[in-house]
Image (cartoon, rainbow, N blue to C red; front, side, top):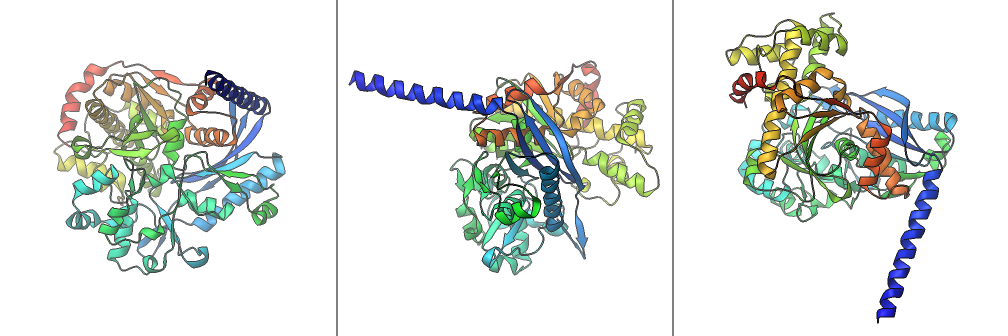
Length: 516
C-alpha cells in the first residue's frame, strides 16, 4: 500500500511539474488578449499584451455609451454597442494579428430577455429608468425585507434585477409571458459571439435572485413572487471558456475562431481581481461613476447587522465574495459637469479639481446616496437643495459644489470603513483605490485624511486589466488570482497617499453623520 501511495504521489507531482512547465512555455510567448469593457458612459476594446511577467495595455477602439430615451423609458442600445464591438474585432484583425481570446465585462443588474429561438425581446432597460420607483415597498409587502436579504445577502437598491422584474410584472409587460432566457448584459454579448446562453457568476450575484450561501439561483424567492424561474440559466465561473467565436462573426471581422472566455463579467469583479494587494487587511474602492467599497471574503456574510447597514455579498474571482456597499461615486461630479455644459460653461475634470482645492473646506456636506441624486434634472441644484433643506450654506460656485461632493464622498467612505471593520471584527490597515476615480488626486487625499488610512491608488485601468488576466487564467497561462495580482504589481504604478490632516475632519464628520 505504501508503494501504491508513493507511486500516486509521484504521478501527481509529475502532473504538477508538466502543468507548470506548459504554463511557463505559454508565458514565454507574448499573448494578445482582448478585453471588451463597457461602462455606463463609454466602452472600449483594450488589448492586453502579456509577456509572461508584465502586462501592457493598448486601446484599440473607444465608443460612447449611455441611455437612449424613448417616450418615458430609458434603454441601452445593445445593437449599436454590439456593432462597436465588431468594429473593435475588425481593427484587431487588421492591425494586431492573431488574438488569443476575448471576453466582455459591463455593469451589473441590467438584463435582456430572449424569446423562442433566441430572439431578443426589445432593448434592455437602463438601471436608472424610473419604472422601478416605489417597487421595493410593494415587494416588501409581499415578501419581508429580512427574508429577501436572508436568501440573497444583497444590498437593497431599487434597480436590482429582482425589482426590475417585479416592475415588469406590475406593469403587465408581455415580455415575461414569452421570455425563455434572461441574460445579463455581458451574457448577451457573449451569446452574440458564441451562440451560448449562460449566466456568468459575478454578474448573476448582483441580481438579488441568487443565493450565495446555497450557491444557486434563489428559486424559492422567484416562486414567492410568481416570477418565471425557467428564464434563469446555467451559471459559469470567471475564466470559463465559453466556446469559439462563431464562424459567421469570424468571417465578418477577419478574426480566427478564437476562444471567447468569460472574465468576471461584472466590471467591479474584474476591477477587484486587479487590486495589487497581499494578505487580507485591506479594503478596496472601485472608483468611477459608482464607488464600490468593501473587503474580499472567503464566504458570504449575511446577518442582521449586514442587512441593517445595507451591505451586499457579490461574487468574485476564485469563489471569493465581494462584501461591499454601493456608493453614488463620481456621478455627482459628472452630472454637475454636464449641467454646466448645458449652460455653456465648459470645465474639464482637472479644472474642477483645481477649483475645488481652492474652495473653503467643510462648508457643507451631503449624503451622496440620497435618492434625489440618482437621476436629478440638475445636479448642482440638487446638491444645493439638499444643503438648504439641512440648514447648511448652499454651494453655488463650481469649486464649492465639487468640493462639497468630494468631501462628502470621503466622509461616506469613512462611514463604510467603520461599518466594515465592525462587521468583520478586525481593522483594515490600508485602502486600495482602483479605476478611473483614482486619478482624482484630491479625492484620494481626502479619503486618506477622512479615513486616517494610507490610500494606495492604482491601477487606473483595473477593469480591463482584471478582464485580461482572468482570460489568461482561462487560457492556462496563469494559475490563480494570487498569480494574477503579482502580474499587476509587476506591471503598473501605484501612488500612495498618507493621512495629513485627519484631525480637521472630525467635527465635520460628526455633522455628516446627521445626514446618513
